[in-house]
Structure formats: structure tokens, C-alpha cells
Image 1: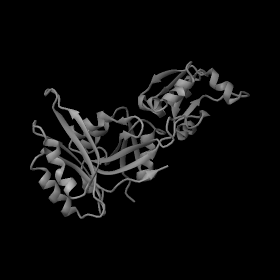
Image 2: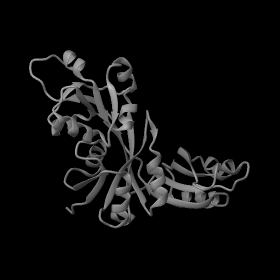
Image 3: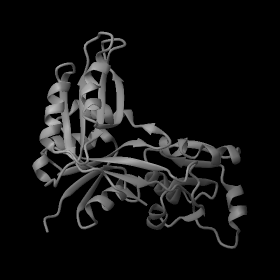
Image 4: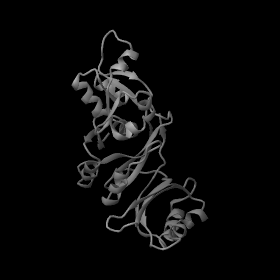
Length: 286
């Protein structure tokens, strides 16, 4: 089997790393980056086969930086996965102390800003603990492990606890137990992945600055009973109060040729349409 190079933001144990393993399997080469931009740059320069990026979370909402990067780079979307996000409070191991007393010792907790946001109720319940932003969840766990300070904690995955030899003080501290993050699988050349019967599409478009443009553009989807699953607007830099739109829709039970006809009608109103990709709807992974 040909080993693929897959890039993700973070280090081993991060949720992006987990999503990559769930989607591709662990017999590939996973390369961590510090930023999302680096993922796109590596793929654009053909230094990696695929990237995996978080695009939205069921609690914290959209990751706008990645929407903007999808527009900036010549990248194709070839897959998606919905990963159940379980946040755990981690800290260095101490002997002969209960978890309850151990919790009282923690004064600062490090994690990615989105992870901290997804655990607001935990911080409301434990007001003595200070939130500190970090580049990624697993990176926060690694940092806490290296500091060997019992007053520091991290919010990260169970896998991160194992990798960095930390104790799990509290499990499931996320606000909503149905906390999922949607990840997109991206590539420079969609021939890298063979797609069987795609049933979802992502695209980008602009609209003429006239009343009713959005309604008219989307009308062909409604007329053909196509389910729009996501629409997101982002400001156009240099053009105040003008926007670029991102659209996801699924077309289960319909043929690709039918969808291409709908997109043709859509283009009669929408401008600068960029099809990010046709792919298979993602599974929800616990």
C-alpha cells in the first residue's frame, strides 16, 4: 500500500491528528504544522498529498481562517469527517492524592482557544482557574507535561494524556456531550483520491450588489429539492460590506449530471463561482 503524506495543524494527540487517523488509517505519514496556513502551503507546493482541517464545530461555530484559506489557495475538497470531541482536564501525575484535591491545586489551564470556548461551563463552575490560550490542544498537554508544575492543567484528548504521560483529572468537561467538529480533507490534485458516487459539494461564489441576488441565486436548489447544509459569508477585503459566500449542499439520490445543470442555472446569477469539490458525505465518528 502506498504511504500518503498527510498534514494537520498541531502535534500527535491533537484532534486534527485523530481525525486524520480516523479518515486515512494510521499506516500513513502524518506531518504536524504550527499554523493552518502551512497546511495549504505544503499542499500547494506538492510537499504533501492531503491536508485535514477543522472547518466548523457544533458548539463554537465556524473556523473563519480556514474558510479564507480555501478561497486563497487552489485547493480541492475531497472528503469530510465529523469527529466527536471529548475534552478532558489533564495534569501531571501526583501520588497519594484524590482527584478532587488534585483539581483544587490547578490554577491555570492551557488549550486551543476553541477548546477553551467549548468548556465555558467548566470554568464558570471553577472560577479560580485561569484560561490560557495555546496553539493546539496536544501542544498544551505537552507543555504542561514538560513544566512539571502541579498548578498547571491542559484540556486535550485522552490520546494526548497517554502520549505525554499525564493524568486525566476530569473527563468530558465540554459544554455539550454531542460536541462534534467537522473536518475537511483537502488536496492539490483531486486525482489523489478516487471518489465513488459523490453526494456532497462545496463551492464559493460572489453576488451582484443588488436586492434579492441571494434569493435568486439559490432558487434553482430549492426548485430541484437540493438540501443546503451550510452557507457562510466572509467580508471582501477592500470592499466594505461586500461579501464572498461559501455553500455546502448534499444531493443524495441525485446524479452528478443533474447537479451540474443546477449549478449552471446558479451561475446565471452568482459570480466567480469556484467549485471546491464533489465528495462523499462524512460519517459521524465517536
